[in-house]
Length: 393
Image (cartoon, rainbow, N blue to C red; front, side, top):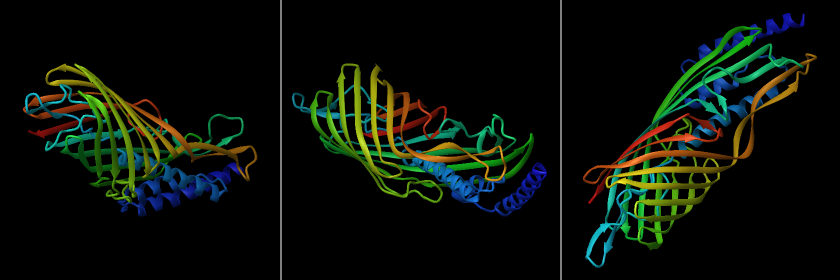
């Protein structure tokens, strides 16, 4: 009798959810579609309060992690062509044969009156979140399992396909030989498609499908660097980065809040090799974080610099998806598994490899690929990007 009541209850809830899904077809907001896919769970657990709390926590965590990715997009460093005045020659010369790191800042500045303009493009398809696959239908939102069994008899899963395409306009201006400013203006297109499926004793029933897209301005980045010490191409600098809440928060294109990151930058360059590092702390924004980065550069040819980098962030109180298991309040011997979230400090590491190529005159082509080393947050296996810069001579 319990099985029959459970089956009837499941079918009734499934019918209601399917009708709701049709009513929601016209929704276009990214937040609305994500909320619909994650919060409308159909497995009868007889504990609505816990179901709602877990679903909302899951939705908010996915949204926050997506915003964290878009609002903290790494932006190309202020490297490239660097100049200094040679007193013996009485003219301005290149300060280094290296074109510098990819995302890690260097202590060498652009030089007074020097400026650059560039455009970068990256495309990312996220395939996992906190180590859980997003796309193959194995992300469990709710499940019922007999105590002692490893396989649930009723399980609801969600699959999400999230893709972002970003074009960023970059610019740098040297105010003096010791001070320069730069900016990054991202334009983002975000696509989300998803499906929720309930599988009861091997029988699958699609509960809901949804899709939405959004495009527009992301969070604008403003940066400044001041060189406090220089010895040849080596030295130390102080920097700061400000991210403005210019992206649409409802469509998850921006953090919705201002962030500020002061940095200390150091570089050591000799002949064809260079080592660069920076450390900073981000206040406010999506999550406060300790940020750090290191890079090794090698001049492979007069017009080519090879670069390897490690980017790190220690995120404070970032949400992470976790599963909780509690006894069913009415069915003896049955446990309910729910996907929810916890707030904890987490470390994120990314390795980057690429090159900078002076293709002609002062045109600079940068190509690189990022690979996450940890499973914290939203991740893609590989993140390629390409940048074109023109430095005004």
